Image (tube, rainbow, N blue to C red; front, side):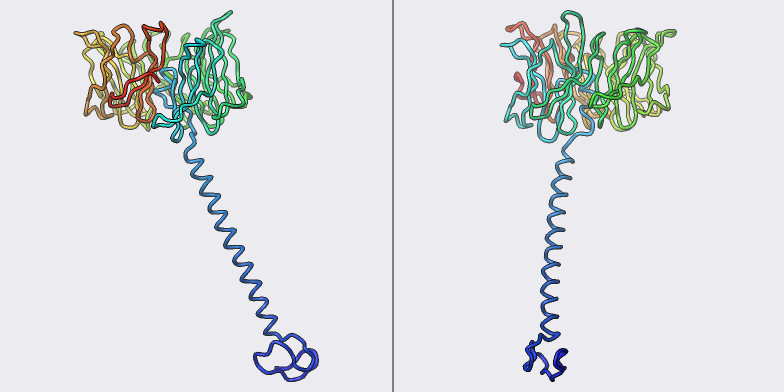
Length: 386
């Protein structure tokens, strides 16, 4: 090997030319390798950091709702909902005689008040991402309702939409859209609306042939609802894509009494009264495979809620007149009494929600003379005020 500067011969392994002191190719190559190793290390560290950040964001987003509450809870006022390991619910505040919105861990710890409702009631709690959505109703001077949202830490309370005619019958938040139904002030027909969660793009989605829409469920890309046909007086179940296409009649009830519709997966569940006897049915969302799940020998079912593969419902015992809360598998097996209501005037069906392994309901407190929120485990244990 010879020096590139002076041409003198250089021994193998030498880093410098002994004659002129010029650096040899070996030293240059060593430095290049050091630089490469440092660059590679930085690249590897960057990849590790990127993966860690991505995993954190993924796990965080995985715990955030896309749909704000379950159909069964929305049917009964949406007084409670869940996201991650937090339960959000409304609670009556005796000192102010107003409803407050609270959150607590699913183990019952860290109970925190987020907001006080300034109206006569708050309903249809929905949690999507970092926001809580709900409907506030006021009866003074006239009956009105407004849709609000706030951050899950209780900040940035904002009015999204105001309804000057009457209260909402149902409200669900899916992604960045809010859906609800109300009686149109001009046509007096039951109407389904949607609006962006920022309060823009209010749109009429569907209008009923009757003056009201019954249960409304938003599941996936479909809206389901039932209404009474103005001619036949029968209850008709419809479905339609959320883009307002493919409106389809799914079922016509054999009776004029049908309610508590729950869409879970690709099944529709509901209760129906025939000859003053109520039964729980299910069928596929395409209208096939109608099946009786449970038969009730009493005169009425107060409410019904489907969570996972369990059905919860309450019925009035024909002998004692007490309301009993039952649960059963969605295939009709394992029918089990959960609890007997202590008050034979009011019943679990007055706003009865299931979140996690807790049941919340709105009931009359004979001491305070007010409706208050109670809770118990889904096995009937730990009954208490929320």
